[in-house]
Image (tube, rainbow, N blue to C red; front, side):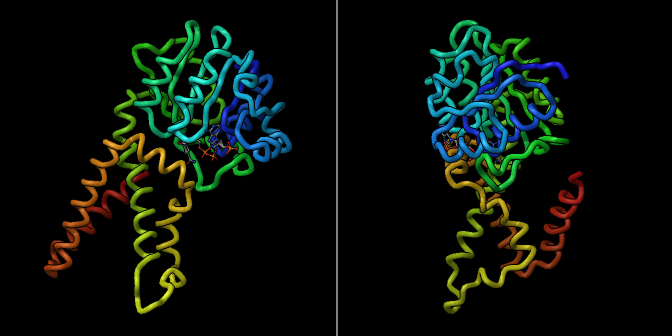
Length: 287
Ligand code: NAP
């Protein structure tokens, strides 16, 4: 394949950034990859795994000469990272990200772009509960969706290039408005993580005659709560950055749980069957 990007800089060489670099390298779509991060240990791991050609903890140095910068650090850090690197970006550079929240990031990063540089918001819908360069793998995005969130300010050619790199990873690319993205992901991703963390928190602190109840958990509990093993800092940041949409989703869920509680409390057999049947139909309808 002919190269799409000559020099790619990845800031935050973890699961998301490392997997993008691996997929693009495997496809021969990038010339060289510079890995940028805070800890030397993770960067050295990325270098030894062949994810990057060079590594640095100096973001200004690392992005110098890059045609594209991909930012995959926790969401609250993305605008400050963009502010830091802005003076070092070469004209024509495309800056894009993989953050799970889009409205605030896109608004702030677009405003931070120097003249001639372009920001394109993105969010690959793929992941695991593991973090760091060692958790990354080239096939993470294959068959998964990647959402791009252009605005009226987005440069069309930059958008087309970002679209192309995600297609190279095997992802299906679609576009939507940042606020629409945040409302959808509050429901289908941020709420489930909040519920999983809250559930494990409640069960882990439940007092059942001094028993360690978690030691009795089996398949169902483990499947349902897998995502509560995700990185707490990442989920702190996502919860705060998508605060309004997530609070609305939590309110909707609380109302649903209260309704379920009411039907259990009143031994409402028909009501419970109806509640579970409707939920089962929704779940069975997910392809
Ligand atoms: P990760 O594996 O923990 O990687 C994040 C990387 O960023 C780490 O290598 C970390 O390395 C570095 N980092 C953290 N804070 C930083 C900062 N302030 N400045 C510079 N580097 C920093 O996390 P991830 O799962 O790849 O997530 C990265 C982004 O992708 C997040 O914005 C997240 O919302 C998004 N995302 C995640 C998933 C998922 O399921 N995991 C899915 C889609 C999108 P050091 O600690 O060494 O700096």
